[in-house]
Length: 87
Image (tube, rainbow, N blue to C red; front, top):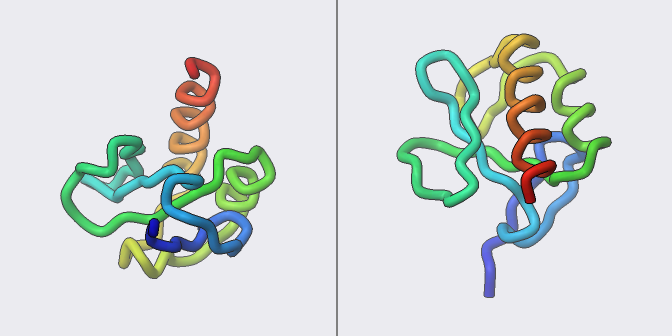
């Protein structure tokens, strides 16, 4: 049975395989599709509405223990769009 995680965009709970993991590294948000990077992770559905909701949100991401800037959130959205477009 797969662990259940919460999407940072919509707040919905889903199995870990249905979500994309990302981590905070050196002040930036980095995708971790293989789920192997060290550190605390957060999760997003691949749906556009979830990504847009995460970018529009302000304030800290508790699971990462940091407050990413709007630019960092937009950069994550752009890299996620590139991953979704490739496959």
